[in-house]
Image 1 (spheres, rainbow, N blue to C red):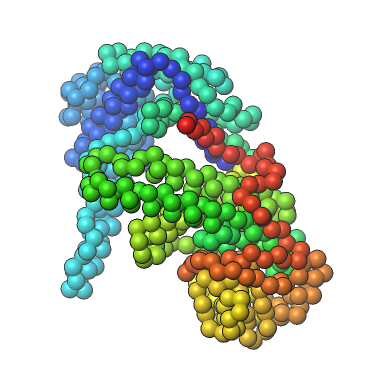
Image 2: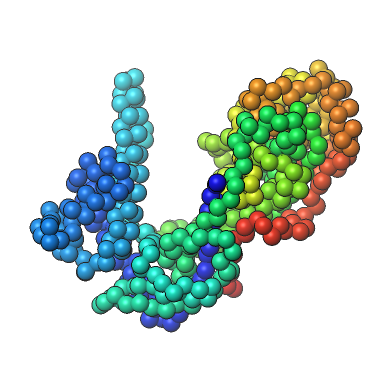
Length: 498
């Protein structure tokens, strides 16, 4: 059996005094976390223990009991009487931060030693411990009770005592068949949210190697881009036959939106000439950009999974992208490119968990030359724009031509097919028949190769072009919105106030 975890997000409604209690509870929680981080820093040997053993060791160092009346670093000297579950949640939060910090520190020391051994100077700055703490409060079982779809009772710190408080919640209901985890108290602006993990148990899909051993298996390979077509999906069989293609659009609209917002931010900064310390400038515009990117990433990922389910695919294949550098230029251009890369990462992460909830596994392959390789004969191709000579390699060109086999088509579709073939090749298969054999197989399945592509867009890796063309036997998106959302794909609830 497999387990899928999603997050239930609900807004907490209440009076001003309850908001003050939430603030006091979070401040106390972070004070305790900071204390235990200092304890771990003074006794870093606990990091060599398991989480349960480390928790026990830290409680012996800080918590007074009948068997341990004089702990070395008593917690009661810096904080109020702390419930055991509240204390243990803070210890686990401090352990996570400490493990992360010391891991980064050890990696930095290794990089420094390697550079000094070569007679060079390490250009990276050493990591530093957290200067401030803003952890969200985690409520273990025993810190909350009487939960329904519309309310919950939480044990909070009012500033003078611990009290049970009944709070109304706004949001979607708990899905049937899901198990509730420990909720977390999250502050977003002037609102407080309750984030609760939901676990669903189901029969997990087989691994990639086992699935591809059967000829009936279908996979969906995805080429994520930065232009108008944010994702190009192709359905392939385990034998390498391409059955269907879908273009998911919306890149130009979000690109223009980000450019306008970033341009306004840059002009506002030039007018003031300074940025206040400890305060986010242009907070509303940054929030608009983040919300727009996150919303579009959820839409594209949901449509990728929906397309795979409609076509009967049980595997999603992506490129393994990393260390992408933004384009040079003005602030708005660099910022736009950087956030486009971030959105691509979100698309992959969101597609992965949504696919897993739908019983589809996800895999990634080496991205090297996926845009330069011919999907039919695997020779290097020429990329060009409409009206240009069919030679050379022009970054961002939407058309592709292979001089060896004569293949012509859309560059992004060709890259998506190559991505799927990389996975098949990794499993010992040979999904590379001749161009004529592939064309016959595609026509037998009702799929043509392609007619024509036009337009100039930015490339993928490097940014690749996106043509607004129509393929025989393929599905093409004309707008951002999904025609018929699948009810079984988890969608986050997002509330906005004007």
